[in-house]
Image 1 (cartoon, helix red, strand yellow):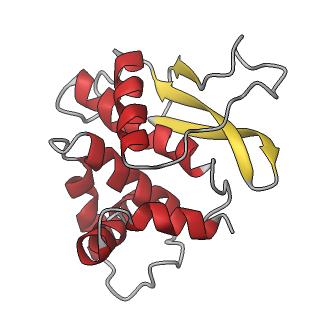
Image 2: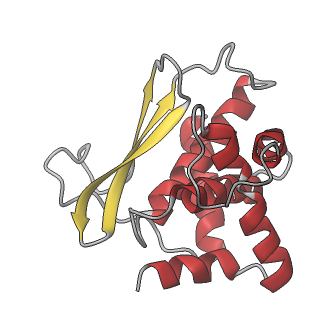
Length: 180
């Protein structure tokens, strides 16, 4: 299931014109090939993370750690948990093909936007918006205090606005500009 979801997400990102995540063949612990390594783990709190490795300047290959079961994690189904997290984390690997050190609001917001682009029926995008709009005096690029995930994931409203206003290639153009 996880591999199928990952393949679907990577194919969608390629069709949208994004760079493919760099090969990890430069890493000594590359999982045996140059492909993205995706490990299923039992997280205590988080649902997933993307780890940059083997960087050349700002461009890095990545590996993913994803929750192994999603049982009791707040997603309507296990499949929805995997679709949400795998598509989101894989977009971080795509981002690392441009610049692994971008502002967190943009990294998390555009990963949420990308996840919603792959799986339009998922609700995680909308579920994060109340946390973002709760503090309408905070600048978009100001890190929130305390628990930050809701605000950062809710910042997906910004790439959504940009694509609606300026066209579907806008996020890709921003990533390309970030890489300069």
